[in-house]
Image (cartoon, rainbow, N blue to C red):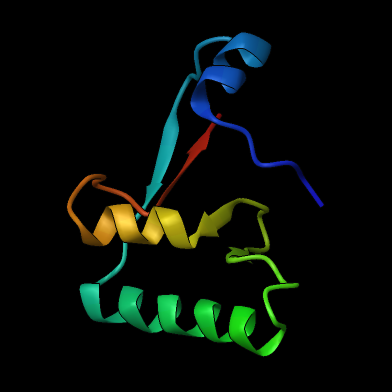
Length: 81
């Protein structure tokens, strides 16, 4: 599994990204996704992670969804290239 790193670490390791891809969702779909991720955590007694692995391998954490829903971030996740 890939390690989750923040933007500052990406910049230090890879330099300034050439482009970024932002992931958005409807408010309703985002809430449904959050409920499913929290249910996985609850059923696994917090042994499973609170993020969703997507085929192209970027991670959406519950914290990221909360920031998006609160209007703190315009995207659920970013992919830096």
